[in-house]
Image (cartoon, rainbow, N blue to C red; front, side, top):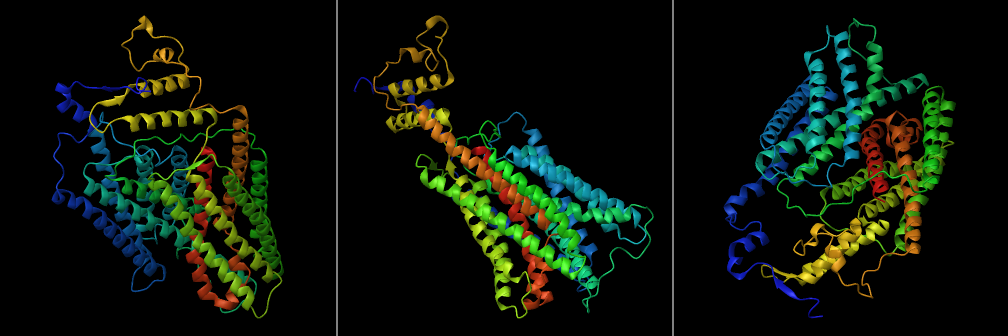
Amino acid sequence: MGERYRLEVLCPRKRRSNQCLADEDPNFGSFPKSSAESQPLKYAVTLSAQYGINVFVLGLVLTVAGTFHKAGVAQEHTLAYLSTLMAMQLAWMLWYFLRMHGKRGQVTEKDDHAGPRWLRGGLTLFAILSLVLDMFKIGYYIGYSSCLTVAKGVFPAVHAVHTLSQVYFLWFHAKDVIRTFQIIERFGMIHSVFTNLLLWVNGVIAESKHQLSDHQKRLAALGFANLTVEKAGPNCSCTISACAAFYKGFYYMYPFYIEYHVFASAMLYIMWKNVGRKMEHHRPPKLVFKTRYHILPGPVLGAAVFATTIGILVVYSIQVGYSKRHRQSAVTMFYLYSIAVLCLMSAASTTGLAVYRIDDGSIMDHSKNPSRKLDGCLLVSTACASWLLSWCSVLAAICAQAPLSHTWLSIPVSALVIIEKSVQNVFIIESLHRERDKGEGGELGRIQGALAGLAASSRLPDCGIVNRALEKAEQGGCCAAAGCITPSPGGSSSSSGVCSEQQSLPQTPADPFPLPNRGHTEKLDKKRIILKNITAFLFLCNISFWILPAFGAWPQFANGLEENVYGFETWILIVNLAMPFAIFYRMHASASLFEVFCAT
C-alpha cells in the first residue's frame, strides 16, 4: 500500500515559491479587493433592482391609466414611454456589442446551464411571430394614418428593431458571465428585464380587452341588457382594403407576442443574476433530443389529446356565441374534456414520482443553478393564478342559488386543476434536480469522478504534493473510456498523461469500480422509457391547455356561474388578472418538460 500510494513532489523545493503558488491560487500576485472597493458592486445589486422596479411601476401606472382613460392619460403616452425604454435598451445592447467586439479573442466565462439552444430556438420562433404582429400594426397604421397618432406608428417599428436586436443578443450572449463594468451591466440587464415585462403587460391588457369585448358581444347577442359594447377601430375610413384583416390578425399573434417577452425577460434575469458570479467549473450533461428509445405510447396519447384539443377549440368557438343552449353545451363539453385529460395528467405525474421513489440509483444535484431555481419559482408562482380561479369556481358552485346544468361539473374540474398542477410541479422540479444515469457511459463518468475525488482527497494541502498512483489510475480510466489501445509512438516513458500509460498499469483482480452489467442497463433503460413517455405525454397536454385559453376558450366568461356570485365587474377583473399567468404556466411547464425529456 505504501508503494501504491507513494507521494511525490511535483515541483522542486527551490522553484516552489512562485510558480507553484501561481498554479494553486489563480489570484496569486493580485492585491485583494478592499471592502471599500467591493462595496459599489454590492450596492449595484440593490440599486439596479430598485431602479428596475420603479421603471416597471411607472409603466404599469401609465398603462392602467391609459386603459381606463383616467387623469388625461391616453394610450399614446404609454406607447411613447415603452418606445423610449426600448430605445434605451437598444443603446445599451449596442454598447455591449461594441465592447464584446473589442474583446474578440479573449475567453469569456460562460454559464452552461443558461440559455440552452432549444430555448433560444423557441424564443426565435416566438420573435418571428411577434414581428408578424408588428407588420400587421404598421399596415393598420398606414390604413388609418389620417386619424391615428404618430406614437401608434412609431411603436411597432421600434418594437421590430428591438425584437431583432434582442434575439441576436440573447442567441449569442445569453450564457455570458460578466466580470467587467459590472455596475453598468447590472443596470442595463435589469432595465432590459423590466422593459420586456412592461411589453408583456401591454400585450396582456390588449388581449384581455379583446376577450372582454367578445364576451360583451356574446352577452348582448343573447339578450342581456345594460351592456354597452365599445366600437372597435378609429373614427375614420381605412385607405387600404386589408385593415379588417390586420385587426383580426392582431389577436391571433398576441399569444406568441406575450410568450416571447416573458421568455426574454426570464433569460435576461438569469444574465443579471450571473453578473460577477463565481462559476462552478463543471459542465452539465448536453441535452440531446434522442429517439432511439421506445417512447411510442406517450407521444401517441399526447398527440391524440392535442388533436382533440384543436377540435374542442373549433367547436367551442362556434357554439359559445350561437345561443344560450349551445353555449351551455359548449361549456359542458369543455368541462368533460378537461376532467378526462386532467385525470390522465395527474396519473402520469404520480407515476413519474413513483418511479423516482422506487429508483435508488439516481442522486440529487444541489449545485448552484440560477436557471433551475428560476424555473421552480415560476412554476409555483404562476400556478397560484390557476388555483385562485379554481377556488373561486368551487365557492361559486357551492353558493350558487340557481345552479345550472354544468354547475356541478365546475367542482371536479377545479379540484383536478389544483391536484394536477401540484403533482406536476413536484414531478418537474424533482426531474430538474436529478442527476440521471447514462448507462455504461454514465457509470464510467461516475467512476472517473470517484477516481478524481480520491486523487483530490489524497493531495496534501501544501503545493505540489500529488498521489501519482491514483493519477495513473485516473488516466487509465479515461483511456479506457476513449478506447485508446495503441501505444504512443516511440514508446517514450516520459509522455505522462497519454494512453500508452494504460498498458503499464497493473491489473488488479478485484476492481473497486465494476462496470454495470446488462441487467442493470436493461433496468435503467426501462426506467428511462417510462419517464420519457410520461414527459412526452405531459408536454403535449400542457401545449394543449396553453392553446385553449390563448386562443379564446375561456369558460370562466361563458358559464355564467361566477358572475352571478361575484358580480360582473369583479369577476372580469379577477379573470383578467389571473388568466395571463395561468396561460404562461402551461407554456413554461412545457418548456421545462421538454428539458426533462432531453435530459432523461
